[in-house]
Length: 66
Image 1 (cartoon, rainbow, N blue to C red):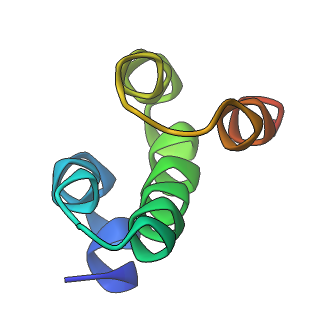
Image 2 (spheres, rainbow, N blue to C red):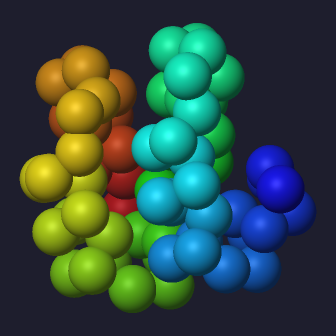
């Protein structure tokens, strides 16, 4: 899956990214998905980010983007 699906279907890529077991890869893929999803459907992406286990500094950085 990865960045190509994050770009075309961030709402599909987001749950997949959460399932990754390597923390660095997981956080990276979540960031990729979140960036795309925030552009496509910010309210849905914000709701998802509020529920997932992700370091607060990454959440804040993602949510501060326009």
